[in-house]
Length: 542
Ligand code: GLN
Image 1: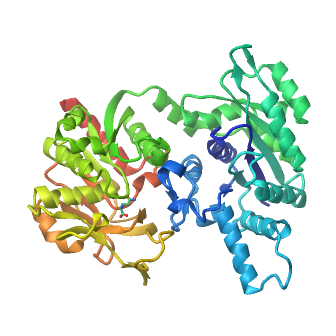
Image 2 (image 1 turned 30 degrees about the vertical axis):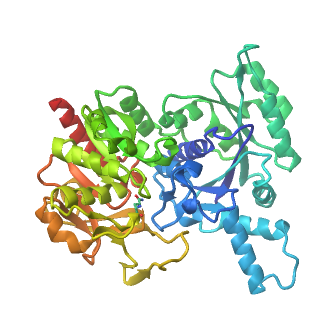
């Protein structure tokens, strides 16, 4: 029997509802339960794939090729459970489904309405594609009171009724701000937010109160009284130094005990939080540190690089070091006298990106890393730029480029309109719409025996997640290999270069996929672990 925990947020956005949900999943898992996490996003885009990283932050890609909200990344990192397409839905997709049904005539002449048709579609999404998990934790995006999230709140209200007290639980995340003028923590915003929630028929069972200092007993009792919640179920959620501390802190404040008590679950032992404690020890007591330069484009909003930041931390955990990241907008390297700013870093990473702006700066950073033998890691666009760099500066094809920036004589990176997935051929509609037209999701890569990539993975065949339109042009294989850039990973049909590496360099690897999406704190991605190890080795030289 799957139980449902609904997580809503109040007062302000950015309280970390995604992390809170992920942490709820992690502590229930630590108590031996099977969990799955899902997110309902109120905006009208069908998925976040078409949104600018500045609007939305990272687009998290699942194995089955869905472009989803970055909170799904937190879910995977905290629970190790791979997310699926069925774990994220937007209002846009819900309406698209309802309207398509209406056009087919599926509603048999009825007037199609938000209640029941839209709410039914939301409820079927929430309850579909489960495989006997003990808990489904369902986060509702946005803040209570937003017009857009109302159908979602109405749907979870209905579900709460239908499932009954033993199977549904509502957690509301709020803010208890400290007002310095009066020197007090204030409970009024929480009271108002819960009032709003109750006015639409949802009585929260648990309040998770974000605060920057301990919540005094008197304030907890006040919140309990005004919000109609038992005072033990008013849980303090303090600011913490590392996101990986959240599960243990929630446990210390009794969150999991309250969840189990409210749902009437008894006979469960204490949680095993040892893996979280181990990670925290490594984070708080590193044996050294390295500095990594990330040369990107969206450096003004670090949410755009959420998984990357975490994967670098994980690489540090694997090597017992703290990773200090310096962010560089690649455009600054278009003036050659700025490259010295990369002189003292222990590794250079060019992450995924789109469009021409700043691309030349990335190529310049690659040249610097290659020539100075600084560890280089290129992710997706960062691999493509490494290929362009070798083609131009080592193979001597001065006009080499990517057709993403327009037609060119030597298209070492170009648009693929067709590729194979298993036994099928996937075709991209040329000139079609932008939404969902990239090579998306998990694809296999066959590694070249004895290459550095094969050694790092300890495997011959791997699966990694993709999100891109352009591919390295296999026609230039010989040119690139003669120039020292080995194609060490290819798609099984040998047509799509997936990994490049430089045997003449201490650590120079570019990958067409996004390994950062699969890295976890208790299972650092091998490429990130190896890159940070190379950075540690380099730090001993400088
Ligand atoms: N812009 C490149 C492409 O579409 C790279 C995309 C990426 O880095 N995710 O192929």
